[in-house]
Image (cartoon, rainbow, N blue to C red):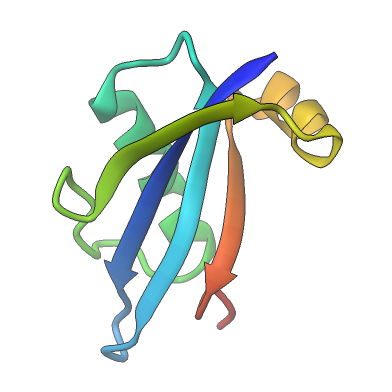
Length: 88
């Protein structure tokens, strides 16, 4: 399975910046859908209401799905790969 990686930087309520990737099947090309996935994640992280638009989230590249991501993508339609400041 090929997936698209959307590089995302969102300013948290405390002023720090979260960095995460939204991983979705390559067939999902609608940025609004990807942004919805990101907003759902922000709610789970207590960051609801923070801006997530094409300014914060951009298509980066395509790669082969990693086994760790695959089950979640099949279940939810996407996977969030956390990189920086995603706790709390």
